[in-house]
Length: 94
Image (cartoon, rainbow, N blue to C red):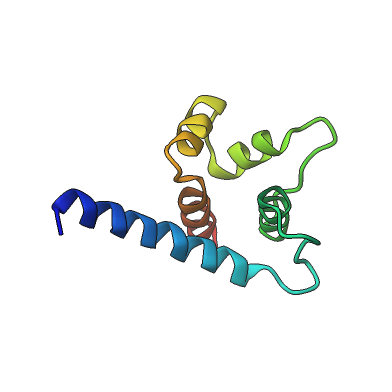
């Protein structure tokens, strides 16, 4: 296997592991109906104490949980590492 392929595979494994970990933290009662990424993200943030304000978008709530601004949040999303960063940040907060 090439080094680039090995690195990509390792990255995908980390992403998958963080998503599995995020799912484990959601109690069955708190698990959203459907399992859309939006609802899973909202529920995950909520159980970690980050409730979406009435005038706040889910992106703003997520950025607040990560401790970053909208530019850094867009970069995380664009690079496909939002789940990893969110799980890492919330694990540090415990």
